[in-house]
Image (tube, rainbow, N blue to C red; front, side, top):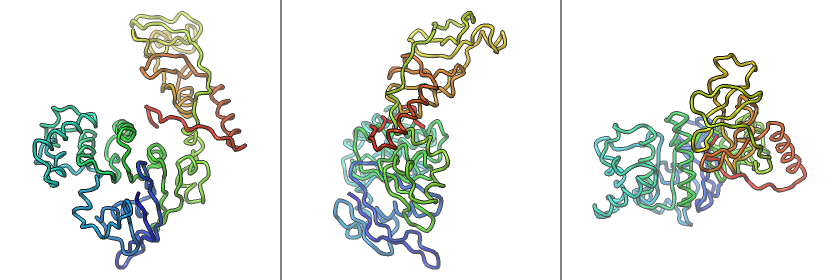
Length: 377
């Protein structure tokens, strides 16, 4: 879909920003450019829509050389989402979303109807359309930026560190929203980030850029975590890459066990000799009640203890291990897609499943890639 052929970018008097880039980006997939500051990843992204002109080489989109397309027409044919959302402060949300449609001479009523559809698509209510950007949170502004980028239904969506300016909780929500949108829309997305966790979560393929504007490794995220090609990639991925790699091993082999549980009414007291899981009326976990006579103080034993993270049906081994390690009882709480309790996982059994997965990989067996966790990591 997008091909870089011997592409370079040099600025006068300085080192190469991008050096001899040869890269093929698959249609309908998310390709992530990741690397440290100043490595050429944003420059490479912006050369696709000619916000930056290459010094040499050719970039084609759908087989067509972008250098032969007038820059304004090229940019209107692609969606673009930037770090700060870039909304026009004097225009309402609905008018911001219709910007490209109106530039393409789409009738006003048709454009506004399309904008309202897109607000719903990105998880915003129609009432938001009457607000101005300064009346929105950072996460809401980014959602509007995505809606605007999708307005003309472009086949290509360029995203330049779109989530880096929001807090971690909102960032995780936006990442999951992008994954959901991609399942529905199947756009060709080029996404720039400096965060390797974000890259491996979102990317179907990841290009790790090194200082000097070269691509050190271009592969599926699982391969980059499992087998970095050199010391630079290994250092950039980090020493905990083995833990990250668990995101690609399904947790379906981990046994689910039943656990003592009660409906929490606010007055429950510890009477059992084991940890008891407290639930709401809908069978959703609220926390743990410490065992009577345990190390907890008498006051603490009558209060809910936070239960750590949850292990959802279909989550990878990384989430199962995280649930077990973060639980005060040592038992990871497992829930279904509706958030209702299905049981617990035991730390030692999660570790055994991890060892089985490692052995299978060592002997060349292929494991199915785990489904993307709804909670995200």
